View 1: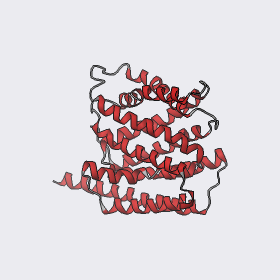
View 2: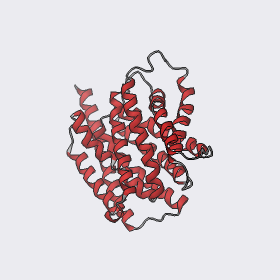
View 3: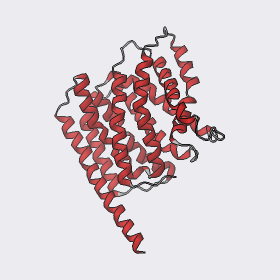
View 4: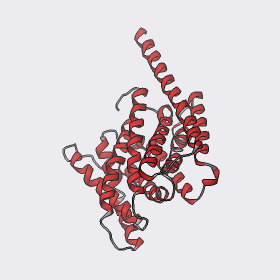
Length: 292
């Protein structure tokens, strides 16, 4: 298992979340009459095509070891992809991303339930401020079916990140992402036929572009959450909200109001404090170990 510092893990997650915003932006640029299940199928297949060259020269003799966990995680991923298309096309980009960022809060709870992780006072405080910030950004009046779909996406993100620990350690990032998408293709294809719409291959280009960005994010998650406990770093995923606001303004002319500034401050400022606190704590621990 790779060993990285908490500070480096946080930096990687920040970069990953900024990249993921561009994947969302491409999805939002789809035509309103795009066949959703076809598009999701295109995302699954193009992801496999992108990842396959990176896996050809790796050890393949035990690629399908632990396949049951890949199947579970792959279908959770597929479910999230479907609801992501619905929610992104129905809500402003910044709003939907704010709901997506309930995932770290859900990870704290799921990690405590399934992995007996201990919640520190600092992570709980940051989670509380983050939750308050999300409420300020989203506003209760904007809660509708699209917002509920976005919440399901957040739940799938949290579940997928925590399921990483169930995957075989000898699978590298490329193999893990390949299997995650590969096992969901039959279900995605079945849904596309069930949708019963004329096949339109043009959205495949958008699917491929979206995949490039989201696979970078997913790869970072696989690497980071294998190395560091979720409750130490999951809150830093909120920082992608700023990227969503910027892309929403520049790409879709979605100007945020004052509640975005207040809510974002409630999310970001505690994260900066947590990052500094964890860095000092790690440095002190390293110093103590050397002295012993």
